[in-house]
Image 1: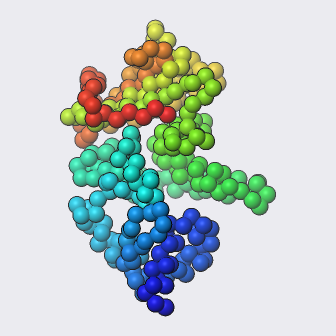
Image 2 (image 1 turned 30 degrees about the vertical axis):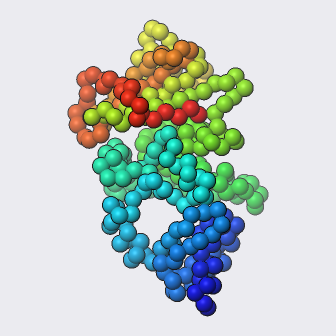
Image 3 (image 1 turned 60 degrees about the horizontal axis):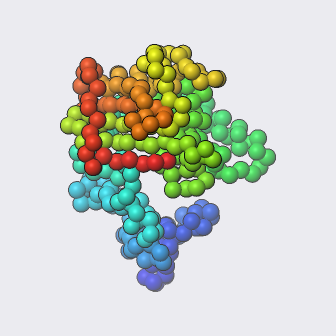
Amino acid sequence: MTTTDVEQLGSIFADAAAYADPASWHAAAARIRAEEPILRVSVPDFPEFWAITKHDDVMEIERLPEQFTNAPVPTLATVDRVAKMAETPVQTLIQMDGDKHKAHRNIVNDWFKPGNVKKMQERVDTLAKQSVDRMAELGGECDFVNDVALHFPLQVILSLLGLPEADFGRMLQLTQELFGAEDPDIARMAEDESQISVLLDDTHPEYLIIAVTDNGKGFPVEGRQRLLEPYMTTREGGTGLGLPIVAKILEDHGGGMELADNPAGRGGQVRMWIPKTKQDVSEEAPAASSRNDSRKASL
């Protein structure tokens, strides 16, 4: 095989259709690994990138975070999408580096330590069996992404965080709306123009502050903070557990939650704060920053 042939094989990393044939994909990747393990790939509509195919090389890169950063391009994407990545309103860990990455990672780090994850093995096995049973019930055909892949990882994470299974569907919906707002199939914009906005403010010196605001019916004026107590709900069919569980998680990590009116008019706002580093519970909610570098996304 010539060097040119190996370079042509590099298209498997950017061609969605190539992943539909796993055997051919892995055969091509094996040949790249054997002949050109660090391969410069040039394909239409994508910026040039390097494909690293050996474990030792990948681990060496992992040990050099200052040279190989997450930002500004954390994932393989087309030229058009790369140009818009800097405009991402809500960042996740894969888009952060340095102290900012560490501060955000520390918020959930304890939940995902090996010992805590191991305690979840029985629950993970149950969820996996449910996924397999669901595929079997579909009669030999399924949309793996929508029927399985969207559900199983999120269900495991929500179980780890202690959320009840009754809230899984709602959390899936909110996750899709938050991170896929540009997709018209899942973006939040009903016929009545109901909206949710998320404000993530990391400018406070001690806290990360998240404000989730909608233009719905809002919270009752009297006794609204009681909605943070278990089994208190104003929603028909509601369990009264969603907000209290989140509030308890925040409290256990030195943060808090409060319910308020939408400052822009009709609707309500859930305001949450959590320390950037571990500390005792705050006695007073930190003041929300109005600086321009706060990030807002309308979903």
